[in-house]
Length: 478
Ligand code: BES
Ligand code: MN
Ligand code: ZN
Image (cartoon, rainbow, N blue to C red; front, side, top):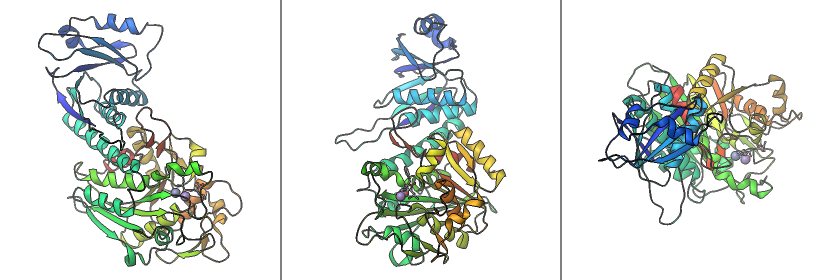
């Protein structure tokens, strides 16, 4: 964990200095003077001018000055300082400080938005999580030269929220059942109202009950969090998050079994929503936000739903269940229908680790974004590029809608009639059946929600994707 602080100059107690190098150039005159160094010469030793430095490369030299604790200076390359390179470099510093409780000084001289993304990435790169016995908590302090206080506060808020989502996602499923998520929602609500439905109160939520009934203790939870701004007449955003605390596939069991191992992260959408809610009060968001966390475990058991069942969703639509591993859309459908009927959203947006197909199309750097509102799509793309949680607009292809036909219910839920082979698209078309014309967007984060390797900003496992995007977009409401 990193704490970001502002500093006017190198403090006596900082243990290390980071000096950025942009496009091979280094400028930190007061540092050079204090330590009697020629920084250009020192850097040339590591970086011959014919070999450009990659963003995130770090070179250290020993330094000393009377009265200062600082004994190391680290050059940190920002490449040519593109948005991506700034994030890589920030993450590299965060990684360097993992497992340490050091006080360091960062000689930063960037624009406000650049400083923010650099520092957010530093705290993301610093994240580690484990349940090793005797594990300690490490908190390093970064003193940022001339850091703008608003920028530091905002970087801290956003990155802490992402790391909070990650903690929830990394927690194994024997600990995090739906009731546990409900407790976390209360713990991190930060003033937001939290209402929880379980048992008989879920009578109308046919999708949540069908999936969550597979794991009767403690059973599914519908968690509603509401943030109300001071401003009157504010717009209302409703977030719906997929909160499958473990996805075995149910009776349509996942095979081969090793693809099941990462499925504790199938609640990443709900985790992102929860983490966003936890930040709204401190960022003084000017918009009303309701989050609906659709939490259930998709287990294989005697009470699990069967392929061939027909269920009735919130609002009355009937659905023929064909593959119990397509459980995410079943819990989301109830959430979307509930929002439409009860919450009058101006913007309705769901976020879910929904389909493996999303990754086939886009890889693991961009989330699949579906919506019919082109203006809003543009806003989300911009927020994605600025924040680092990037989205790509995917089509809701009307011609594929026949994939949803069912002989015995209103629609079938795997949406695979007709072999369109576009699993992420047809899943989005399924969800659209429940939004009743409301202004809606769907984020399929199956690809971006999890990292396969511990690298850059991301730890291996849950990335906390979506928190930066949503907070950035919410921040545009004035
Ligand atoms: N949780 C999975 C999707 C997923 C796959 C997320 C890989 C992250 C990584 C989802 O519930 C699922 O199983 N989807 C199926 C749908 C299919 C049965 C129609 C899929 O994508 O294969
Ligand atoms: Mn599944
Ligand atoms: Zn799933």
